[in-house]
Image 1: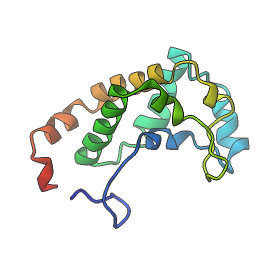
Image 2 (image 1 turned 180 degrees about the horizontal axis):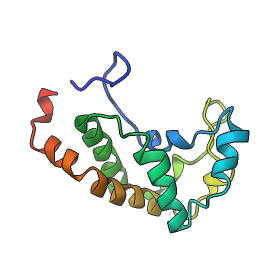
Image 3 (image 1 turned 30 degrees about the vertical axis):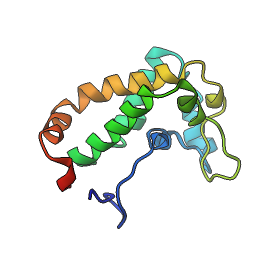
Image 4 (image 1 turned 60 degrees about the vertical axis):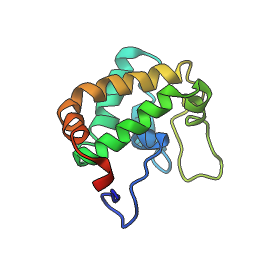
Length: 138
């Protein structure tokens, strides 16, 4: 059982965890203003966003946690595009908020495919290491 790196619970990441670095709730004037400068549908902007707010955010995770997180992303990409779009929809009852307009992203699949591509390069050694282990022993 792989435990959460910071909590005393099982590690069970969801696709929405990839968007946690973009959460501007109660930070609209700071992080929100910074993210407003980017267009998540633009490949060059998306590249910067992924490195600054996803790769950097998860850099402290163990290779096992990265492997599980990467697997979740792969599973989502194998699924329906509508599921990928759902992650960007605003939940008015949530204490989470994505930047203005992100819920209308033209190509959410392209966004997550770009994340997958970058992480597969950046985490290549860690993903390989984890793939050589028996995950049931974690």
